[in-house]
Length: 406
Image 1 (cartoon, rainbow, N blue to C red):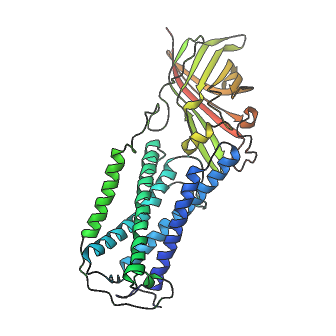
Image 2: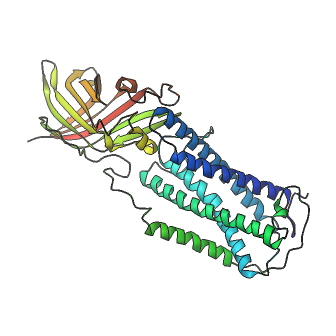
Image 3: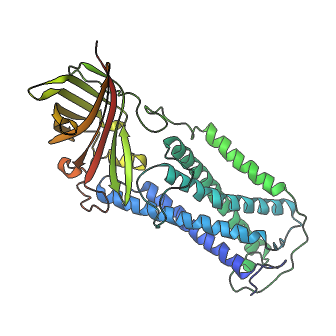
């Protein structure tokens, strides 16, 4: 069997690319379906869901490289002619489907890869080359957009595959020609193709179909996103939760973020709704500068692609425990200040100290600090006892700007 194509048959390398691409795509599609529909009510189910998604993404990345190699190889190859090119409508449809397949084979895994790089957390690609892409920032908007495009292009790919398979079966069962057989491995028969004219119509038809898919998707509202209480970089610009505790400082803006290590990658998240009631005086009385009470709306957490899982019962259980509260005395320390008190989270109260720095200019104060929690203290992710899946330590980082109350 020749390695390269001829005018009447496909070469062995073209056949190898064809069937390898088909294998990868037909593996990635069901893996994605299974992963998307897998439950995640506890840690074991989350780990299984992540494993399925990791396989899906890894196969997808392999598919895009294989598809690109196949396309580059085909650019320098003779394209065997159709065996029924005299049926103009059918021939145009066949070439259109081929254009849809080639484009979708690249667009589907590419949009999935960009979505993976734009978001944080959950199901890494199983390879040693990192999880990011050049020029792709961490962006919830970009992640949501590419996730939608991934779905739309996947549906286009699935429809193209069905049309391609249906056409091959028609040639086998109805036309009884060698169209399917000449793509099979080890087949050396070379039926004479009919003469056909080159036409841009199939490519234009494929572009029109992709455009129609985007128009229909937009009309159906798949690109619409709910209003977010955060800026483009994912940080809240003002705390939205309220507290009735006394305060002589008013928080103007700030961020409350967490960082966890999950499935080999650091995952950063933020709470969009929180408030701090601060009583503070530069002059300490009995070593105490004041008090702070911070309340956090648990359901306002955004934790990349694991947000929904993080709010489930085995983790933060936001449906039952909607608010976390940190209440502390503000003390002087060697490195600045220390908020020394206790955190109530998921119905459990644990002592907690938060060291922070503070700068006051006129009537404006700027602070930043961080501390480390152990999720096990609060019964979070009890079914994930292995740190290789979810680390025990959770870093909490807070920064804010406050003005002195008149």
